Image (tube, rainbow, N blue to C red; front, side, top):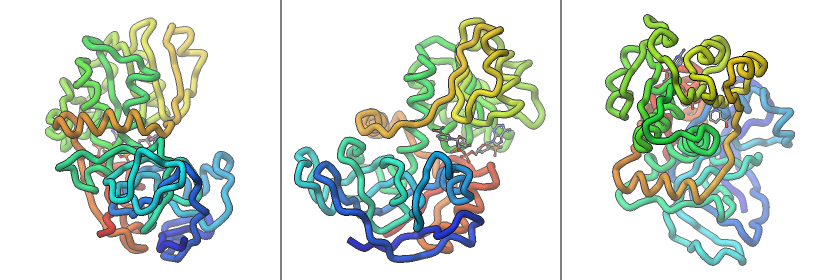
Length: 313
Ligand SMILES: NC(=O)c1ccc[n+]([C@@H]2O[C@H](COP(=O)([O-])OP(=O)(O)OC[C@H]3O[C@@H](n4cnc5c(N)ncnc54)[C@H](OP(=O)(O)O)[C@@H]3O)[C@@H](O)[C@H]2O)c1
């Protein structure tokens, strides 16, 4: 099956993004074809475009970027029994070179979840990668429990905006870092304390935290070790820099890499249906060569608000 897609044929800058027609692989028995109505941007998209992840993903070209999808099932593999043509679904598909900046994408059926009634394709497309990252970091790795104190860095970003809501829903006390202009947003999402990282030192504000969720790395990760209580956890999506220092301070420091998971995404869908988890869509572009170019430019500023969505209606 051929599909229109935005691809790269070389690693490099945004000018490598090209509209093209790509032959998708043959559908396997437990896979479905999804007609893409919306997808969203994650920093991994432009990190992959630049070639930073080439050791991890040793793919041939062309590469279709994009690893979030919301759409409608168009075809099902012969061993798929629980999904049907016409179902409204969303997913964080497996990492392959056939991503979601396309009219059609292939998804393993165990990575699918149903989009709740009343939730748009745009709202759904914002969730899978960032929402599952927040979920897995806070609960599978961070073991966050009700009554605990958590510091979530970059609360106004894609991952942070979901993490605040999930931590609050769990019953945790939530500190977050964000620029002053985003404080109304992070408070609305449920943050108890918003710290302006441009004028305040978070290590003066947060003491004896049970968990720090690090989405920034570098000096911020290093300083975060100071705010944790002994026995606390530092969970980072950017790798752990100083394992020895963490160990000296009796802190469990762990790097996480998101695992696609349809069951967990269905839990997020249920929170969305109940109005307990919302997508913050800070910007929207069409799924065209120019639209993706502009969306990457915004994401690369490191100051996009919430999620950037690409629409394909
Ligand atoms: N390992 C994994 O599986 C995994 C999964 C998902 C994401 N990630 C990584 O996690 C990182 C975050 O992803 P994302 O999607 O959340 O990115 P994002 O949406 O692009 O993050 C942008 C946000 O970061 C905030 N920010 C920038 N500098 C800050 C600072 N010094 N202190 C506090 N906030 C700051 C900005 O808020 P202001 O405008 O208020 O400054 C902005 O809202 C990326 O590097 C991504 O590649 C890894």
